[in-house]
Amino acid sequence: MEEHLTVGRVSDLADVSVRTLHHYDEIGLVRPSARTTAGYRAYSAADVERLSEVLAYRRLGFGLREIADLVDDPTTDAVAHLRRLRGLLLDQRDRAAAMVTAIDGELAARARGIRPSPEDQLKMFGAQLYDTIGSAYPATRRTEPRIAAQVWAALGDARTVLNVGAGTGSYEPPDRDVTAVEPSAVMRAQRPPGSAPCVAAAAERLPFEDRSFDAAMAFSTVHHWRDPIAGLRELRRVARRVVVFTHDSSDAGWRQRFWLSRDYLPEVADLVVGRPTIDRLAHALDARIEPVLIPWDCADGFFEAYWRRPEAYLDEHVRRAVSIWTRVGPDAERRAVDRLRDDLASGRWDECNRDLAGLEAAELGLRLLVG
Ligand SMILES: C[S@@+](CC[C@H](N)C(=O)[O-])C[C@H]1O[C@@H](n2cnc3c(N)ncnc32)[C@H](O)[C@@H]1O
Image (cartoon, rainbow, N blue to C red):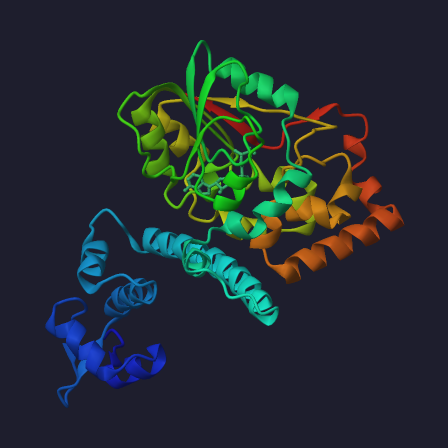
């Protein structure tokens, strides 16, 4: 007979009160499928799986009615729930990091006798990842002309262009009528004077009518969106043509191609778990997929940009302008940088990456979706 856990045991293991478990039973959210001979509720493996999902969504702040809809959704299996939960938790971690930084700022201000304005106090709760790391962005992030040319060619004859997740506007075409969308206040504040007007909004809910633009573009931002597919559908809704620069997040397509993520920072694999595949992103846009090669002297300091200039990754400024380094956490970052420094000093890096020496451009899984 299948093994069951008693209500008391479940309560101990999950650190949730028996009363709560009874309540979940009464409202039909998690009904233990058996009773012990003494009449206590007993949970099967399937009951425990459902309870784990309920508790995880609860911890993320979902209401019980919302949770019932989520766990009863017949199109979502246990793996899909785990992936969704993982994404939501990473999001929460980023937000928590952003709040810690905002609190540190407020503590430092108070220590100097400055009382924060009510606006500043509230801003802490709207903090985005890029409100934390965004001020380091302009140090190394700028337009790479060869990649920009590929993006602008893909925009075709579009006159009006919406740039979503626009940041400081590095890839906005200078010869078209551009409107930018950017949720982070820090990034918006760093847009150069005279750049396109910028709306504070997120990709998942664009404040524009259907077909308001000839084209919509999104450069190096989709992997930050809470719901990438919903965001892409929004781009599709508001524009006739859509151009997206992103990466193929599959292991073989991206992580294993680049020596940094393959040999020094395997933790990046965790960051892409649960993210839609490149084929799914392309499907949402009905788009074709073009490879984007990275020139050896790439001007835009994104994660893969220094594939032939490994010393660059030892520079704190280079790392702080790329969110991956913040997202993997300080321990992984320190370990990767120390190992790379040692391998550069010993000649091991050169030995292992001999094939890169004369290469002008590399195929590291970056992709343009044109739909
Ligand atoms: C790596 S930066 C890229 C900025 C710019 N596109 C560029 O290439 O320089 C990613 C940007 O996406 C923005 N972002 C994060 N979540 C977003 C969302 N849900 N919708 C739109 N933009 C978002 C961030 O605030 C950040 O400015």
